[in-house]
Image (spheres, rainbow, N blue to C red):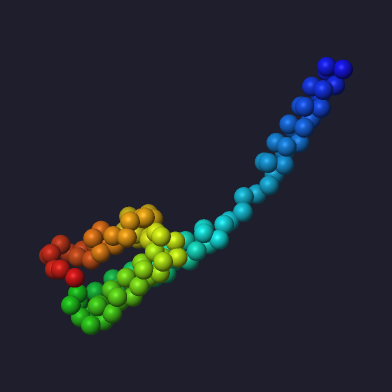
Length: 112
């Protein structure tokens, strides 16, 4: 009788372990939103860098591209209370992209 209960317990454990291992994890909506946000930020950053190279840091086109990049940071923050830092390749939870994002990559200390 004792061995029958133990056999049932082992079989139940084996079945639950099999089900747990065989069930693939689901991607959450939050993961999808973050992936979309990351993609938008990376594209906006690429556009901003292009405008800097082509027209200069103080051009109207660079200012417009910088504004679009800030908009993408804002959209991410509104949806997820986080923003993607493409330079560090990490998610940040402080609304501090104006302080931490390196707008002045050539280090000549222009304030934007």
